[in-house]
Image (cartoon, rainbow, N blue to C red; front, top):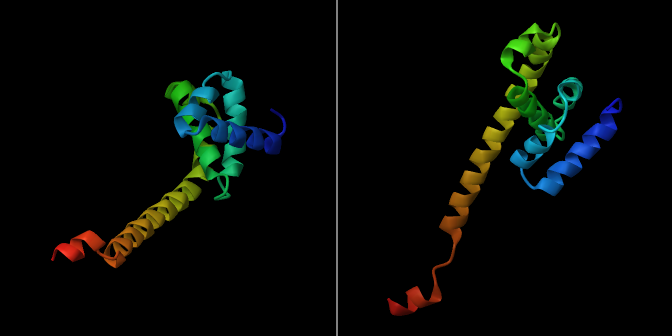
Length: 124
C-alpha cells in the first residue's frame, strides 16, 4: 500500500479482470478502512490524469460507500482532498459529456449514410 504506482497498476488489473466498475468497487469494499483512506489519498493524485480517472473514481466511490460521512468529516484532511478532487472531476465529467455528444452525432451520421437494403429497393 505504500507504493502508489504499484497500487494503481493492481487496481487497473482488477478493473480489467472484473469487467465493471461495480465489480471493482465490491473488491475494494473488502479492504480495511485505513487501506481505503490510503487509496483515497493516492486517488487525489491519480485523478489529475485523465488516463487514471476511472480507477480514482472507483476508489472514491468505494470510500464513500464504506465509510460513514460523519467519520469522513472528522478526518482533518478530508475536506482538502475533496477540494483538490472537484476541479478535476468537473473536467472529467465535461469531457465525458462531450464524448457522449460526439458518439450520438456519429451514430446519427452513420444512420443517415447507410445504404438502403437491397430487398427494400427491389420491392419498390
